Amino acid sequence: MERDPRWKDLNIDWGVIQRKRLFGKWDEDLHQSDVGPRWLTQPEVAECVRQVLHDGAESFYVLHAYTLMPNHIHVLLTPRENSQTDNPFPPGVITQR
Image (cartoon, rainbow, N blue to C red; front, side, top):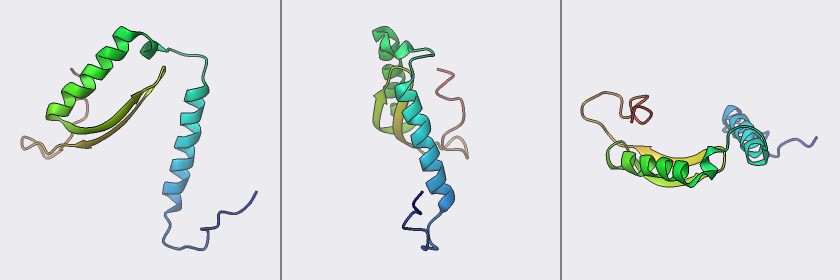
């Protein structure tokens, strides 16, 4: 196996690179999976998820982009500041809706 050409660069965070590689592999496995729940292929379920993403964008985050896949979702968002708490994006806020 060839060594990464960046191996001599001391400013590279190899932990980040490793996490990106693992995420890429996991994501590819999801894309190729023929097993497990595929609820997002149902228009009613996909529409419900889409609506929740857009509703949360009004209060909790800036929604930049998303993609609904048959068995998972990709979401790019930025948490909004919340003046009522120190945590700008309290865990479970979206899942409680």
